[in-house]
Image (cartoon, rainbow, N blue to C red; front, side, top):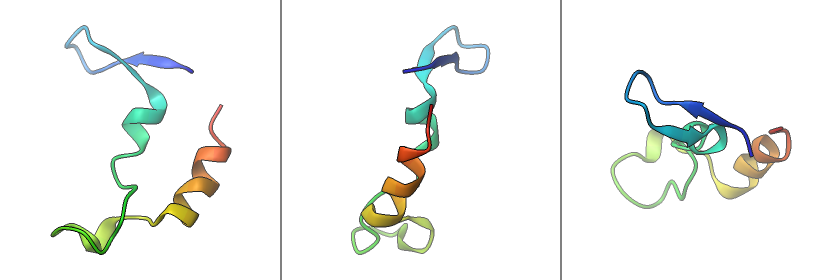
Length: 49
């Protein structure tokens, strides 16, 4: 797992975590217009370092 600084907060977070905000079940909640479902999300996750 690779980590990076979150802006100038001093916090270290995984790059995978930062990139997964838009992954989820589009049928749940108000954000359904910009979420990727599990199948499409897995394609991206498999390409991560």
